[in-house]
Amino acid sequence: MEQREYCGAFVESIDARGLNCPLPLLKMKRALAHAQRGERVYLQATDPNTLRDITAYAYQANHALVHASTLGTVFHLVVEKV
Image (tube, rainbow, N blue to C red; front, side, top):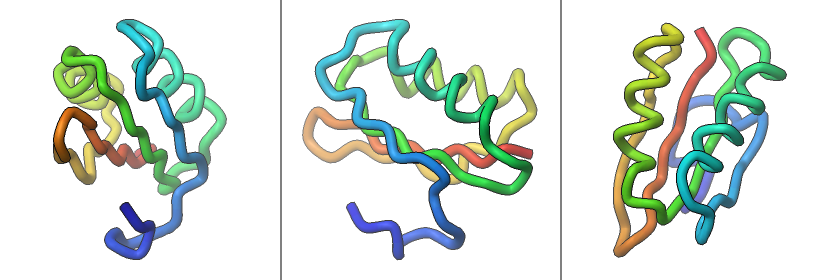
């Protein structure tokens, strides 16, 4: 997946493939804690709970889930800090 598919740059790209819950979520939280408002974090993960966890977290933390897709067994998510 290439960055140019989205508007804006990623402040961090996280490869959490092979990591189990809750590690993909914790990595996303840490990256967003260090991000500035308007910056985006890209996450790749294979844990089946990732899509649900990141979606719920983005909603609860008032961040924007900009992109979510699945390619094979890999989830691709982009969250913007609001």
